Length: 135
Image (cartoon, rainbow, N blue to C red; front, side):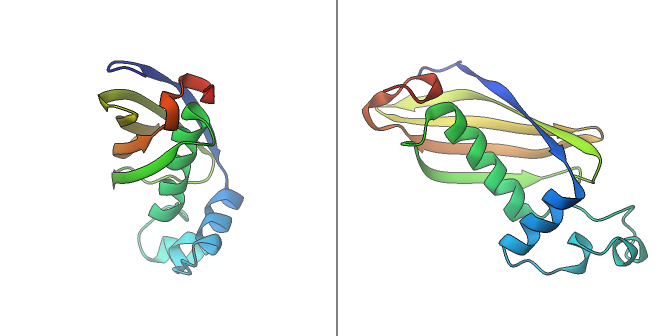
C-alpha cells in the first residue's frame, strides 16, 4: 500500500430491506429509518439510512480491499445527502498517508443526489498486506 493508491469502487444498492435491517441491527429504532409514512410526515420523501449502517458499509469497503486481517483503527465520517430506497451508493477511496503498516484512506460514498458520506479511515494491515487482502 502506498500513497495515491486507489481502492476499487464498491457499488451498494440501497434497498428498503438494507435500510431497515441496518437500523434494527444497530438498535436504532427511530421511525424515520423504518416507517415511510412517519418519515414523510417529518419532511423526508421516504425512510433513509442511519449513520451506523453507513459506518458499517464504509468498514466493509476498507476490509474488502485490505483483507479480513485488516484492523480498523478509526473512522471519521460525515453524512451528507441521505441514502433513500431505490438509489445506489458507490464507495470510492484513496490512500492519503502510510506509516509502517498503517494507512489513512480518504473515503467518499456518493448516490444519485450527491455525496452521502465523506471522511477518512485509519487501517492497520499486519505485515503490510497488499490490495485484495494478500499478505
